[in-house]
Image 1: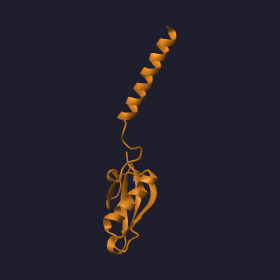
Image 2: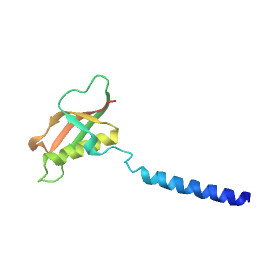
Image 3: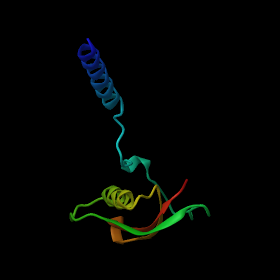
Image 4: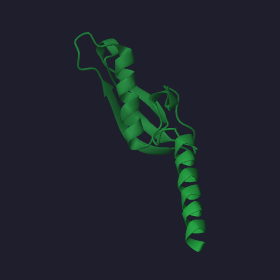
Length: 102
């Protein structure tokens, strides 16, 4: 009888853990849409994480592609805010300072 109870408890826990895994579908890392980019200085309580860069490798690259690359670099550093410092010709390269702001 005890084995049957343990079997059912084990099955219940297994099914419960599967359902919890199904419910948590948000990514571990933020997405590029979650990164705020501005020329404005970061708030004083933000922590600087270093320089980030974005660029396009195509001769027909767009500023949007460079900005997307900049955001991906910021994500790799754990940032959620980037202050743009310089933009290259045709805005196909962008450099900024990455920050983590609470």
